[in-house]
Structures are given as C-alpha cells and as structure tokens.
Image (cartoon, rainbow, N blue to C red; front, side, top):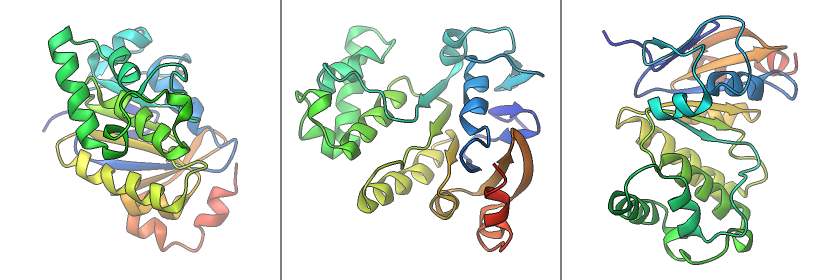
Length: 220
C-alpha cells in the first residue's frame, strides 16, 4: 500500500481523495495549509508522498508535486490569462505552451478570453484562473483555501463539481472551507478544525448529517 500524499498532525490525505478541512474563522485552516507548504514552521513532521519534508523549502515542496490555490485568488492582475498560466509553469517552452492550451480547454471561460488582463475577469473567472495556475505543473497534492469565497452559486457548483473528477485521476485534494455543506458534497471525508486542533474526522456523508457539526464549526 502506497503512502498517503499528505500526513501531518493526525491528518492524512490519500491519492485520489478529496478531504474537506472545515472550521470557522480563526480555526487555523489557512495556518495548516501554510505549514504544509512550508510558509510556517511545523511543530512535528510533515510527510509528503512518504517523505519527511520538514526541512524542505516551499520551492522544494512544490517541486515534489504540491499545488496551491490561495484564499483571495491572488492572480497577477496586470498579466493576461495566458501570461498568468505561463508564469506558473516550470516546464520547457514547448511543454509549457501545450499545458496552457490544455488549461484553456479545461476551463472554457478562460479559453474564451486568453488575452484578457486578469483584473478584467469576473471573480469566478479569476478563481478558475487561480485553479488553472495551480494545475499547470500537474500536482499530486492540491491545497485549496476557501475557493468558493465571494463566488456566485453557479460558479461554486461548477468549481466543486470538478474536484472529484480531478481526484479520479489520482490527485489528492485538501479543500479548506467554511461552507461545510458545499465542501462535504464534493469530498469523501471531512476533518473539523477548532483552535488549530482536529476535533472530528468522519466520512463526508456522516459529517453532513451530524446535527453537532454547526457547534463544532462554531468552536473557532
């Protein structure tokens, strides 16, 4: 049996799995993602793909196969859609161009406006661009921080529909969200965080049906 894509502080995410990381404001979701990435020091070991990466830099962890979609999208506002994608790739020029075209085909709303400056895109289009950028280097583990924040319901539905499809190809996805019902609908398992500690782990359908979930989420 292969090692999980991610193991840290009692949390594990396997290849082909979508795990919803739940918690209210201040629960520690973003801090945990930043610890996995290496932006913050970890109190214990961090394993990526079976390897202890505790002393690795952010760049080294990304090179191992970690992708990140930050809260607030953070696209390069002055660059075009195409330029944003190109800037996110580490592949040689020919491979980078092919991958850009694959992303434009995967996200039709981007494919319709490849030369548009990012600041001219809608919030939903910017979120899709942030996701496409994270996918440019074919990550094995994708970290997503509040990706539905501020998006219209139809855009949210489209975004979350894609996650199980991406996981079906073997990608591990850790989805940090405050909107528990939405996140659990796309996940196979849920983890509830409160004050930086895991307080509940269960299959997504069990958590979604748990009347105590709201109280757990409110724990902060």
